[in-house]
Every structure is written in C-alpha cells, then in structure tokens.
Length: 251
Image (cartoon, rainbow, N blue to C red; front, side, top):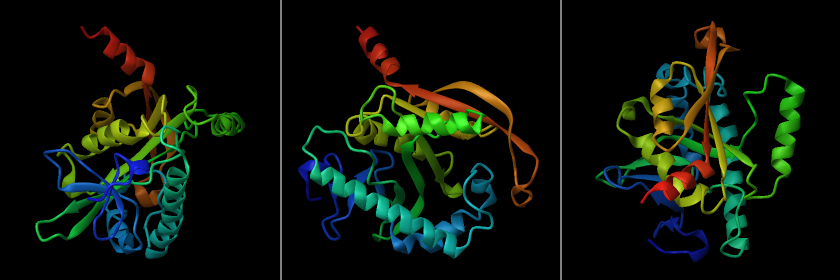
C-alpha cells in the first residue's frame, strides 16, 4: 500500500496506483475507490433493482448502459480533477471534493465487486420549495470559500440490496466523514434528503450524528415507472458545532 503524503489517509493500490480508503473491521474487505469505466454493467444491474431505485430520485428508470457510461464519464473526470487539486495544494489546505466514492467488496480470490456509491457534493437546498430562492441559495453556497462555516454539503448514496442491513453504509459514511470530509474538506454543515419511509437510510446517518430536522409531506410526484403516487422527504442535518460541543462536555 504505497503512501502519498498529500493524499493521506487515502492509500494507493500497489499494482494500479489507484487511490482507496479501506473500511475498518468487520468490513475491512470493502474499499472505497474512484469510479471505473468497467463499472458500467454492474451499475446498470443495481440501478434497475426496484429495492434500490424506489429510494432514489435522480437516476432514470429503466437505467440503460448509455446512462451508466455517461455517468461514468462525468464522475471519472470529476474524481481526477479532485485528485489533481489535492496534489497541487499544500498539506493543510482544504480541497473541494473527495476522490473516492465507489464501494467495492474484495473477494477471497481478489475479485472486486462493485457494491454502490456514496457521493459528497454541495447542497442544492432541496428543502426550499421556491425555485428561484433555491437557485440563489445554491449560488451563494458555491461562492463560499472551502471550510467556511456556512458552506453546506450533501450526501447521496446507494448500496446493493444483497448487502443491506449489515452496517456497511453506516461505516462508509463514518469513514468518509472522519478521514476525509471533515479534515480534508473542512466540512461544518452537511445535509441529506431521504424519502419518507426509508427508515434504514435514516438510521445510517443518525449513527454519524445526523438528526431529522423536518419531514416534508407530498414532496415529490413519483414517475409511474417507479410506482407512481407522491412521497415525502426527511431532511437530516449534521453540524460540526454539535459534535464539538459533545466532545467538550465529555469529562
């Protein structure tokens, strides 16, 4: 596991030089890496699983190979730009993203299976109903310098249904926050929007200090291809000062 000081705590694969973070036990056979072009078929498989897509707003359904290829082109480019930024900045300066996001399970024979995705990016104020106000707030957020106490980020994630209920995503969120998002991105505020009824996802983020701030009823009309009807939105928040306050109160 070669080391690159500017990337720490991210490590580099000794054969491919690909950056990665490894989850701690009991899931140390799972790593988080950048996306790969070879992920396309597996992404199509996962994003056509109704157990996954029922809780996702963004991906089209059915999800086709051209959708996966387009997504990979964008995210691979984004990951490389973040890596370039990290390498160009002195240690201690905040960076604008995380270069790893794709979850992979390493099997006993060395095969790596794509399990899902966990992204962190700028919050789009999805809980603001007025479109123009949402655009204004998003623009202001993007203009704030990295590490600014009011710059707000957002999580988005999904995991293969075969691996639900095992504590994997909870550990992914915890690892990314503690090892990169807080120390390397300077995060002070993070939000996440979760469809009402997705209790498992709410619990994932509550384990990392998020709390449900509000629930918006009838937030979105669901396309007929995904079942139709309307669905509400849980809005969860994480605030650095809450974590700092808890630490200061400990004896």
